[in-house]
Amino acid sequence: MNTTPAPTSNPAATPPKVVLVTGASSGIGEAVARRLAGEGHQVILTGRRTDRLDAVVAELRRDGRRAEAHVLDVTDRDAFAALVTDVIAARGRLDVLVGNAGVMLLSRLDALLVEEWDRMLDVNVRGLYNGVASVLPHFRERGSGHVVTIASIGAHEVAPTSAIYSATKYAAWALTEGLRLESDPAIRVTTISPGVVESELAEHITDPHAAELMVGYRAAQIPPDAIARSVSFAISQPADVDVNEVIIRPTAQR
Image (cartoon, rainbow, N blue to C red; front, side, top):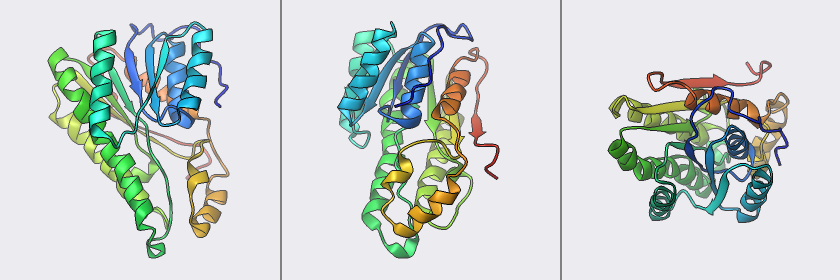
């Protein structure tokens, strides 16, 4: 669990927003939820591990923060749309979607772990556009909104074992950039591409070769709150400022 203390107030004096964060039960998603709730925003934490979500929300509420947990599989388009509808009905609006849910199942192509490739495509790409499809009509009707995609440095480079993962993150980058170009200026769009961040992602790699390579690659890491701070920065800008893209990684990662 991320124990980074949340700030007691919003440093940018941003009016409170209603923010939905996917993949918020751990890692970057949890850190984003904690930071934004600490800055006074109403945060909806979503994910599949309800025990983790409930624990984070309980802690935030004990500290006087506004947070709630909802189970969500981002690959289920109907469930995503229904949740967004419910949030808007209960809160009157939704201001920000942070599309963070993702998996990183690295392997060489000749390992032929096709089911894992399918899983990455489903979560990292389908899960993202399901979110966009769910929030975009509301954003267009209101004339405002913000989509923040947590992509990866893998959207900008390919390494041995990362071909499919990088393909999904290139797709996430392209999808988000296309949304920015197609949207009315009142709808803001940000892509954040983290480098190596402390998280559970590497623990799910099943390919022994890829897992071994990750040991050295992940020697230099930054805490997930470093990414959360960049999300906070992006959504705290005045309405006429759109932070298009941020790449953030350890200084030792080259």
